[in-house]
Length: 203
Image 1 (cartoon, rainbow, N blue to C red):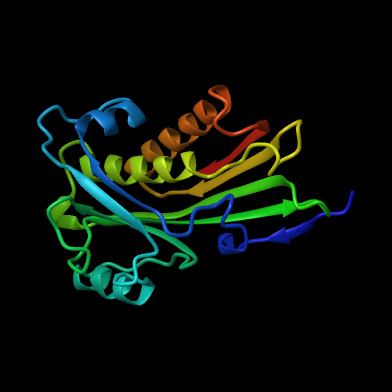
Image 2 (image 1 turned 30 degrees about the vertical axis):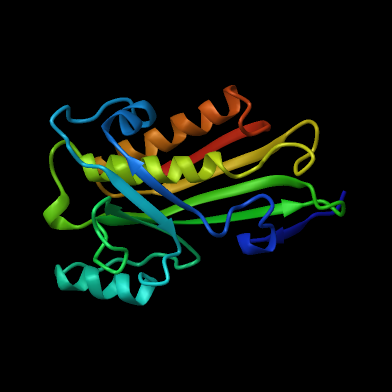
């Protein structure tokens, strides 16, 4: 059966939410998703997918203001703030990722490709056992939980999922493992109907 490749999630809003945000994520929520968190953390976070205030150009300027520079995609970005912040204020960090897929002639998603390009935390928010990074990872997982990769959007046998990430730090490696574990949970809890789950992760 022939398949066509797509990589713009706004083509399938019934599967991939395009106007997505999440509020009031606290220590308990993050611990549930990531397995642990600094017990002294008081951080409560919120997020938005593709914030109009924080497109890649503005995020680049924010990164450069800390004498940092990264190459990452701009197609899908979740920015994260402390809950009391206004969205126009600089986020505590963000995650850049891409979703691509192959679908059949009947528009069922047969294969999904999830690539995490970058998890960035503002230098003044780093430390405490990676609290901010864990919050950012949790927001990604909450977004993925809202993607409807179940029949009739995928074949009855399920979707093949390929996850790719390539991080150059121990912290990035840990977050990548958290994402992997949660993809397995999505499969085991039948949140996504997954036929095959493959990881290609480099460090």
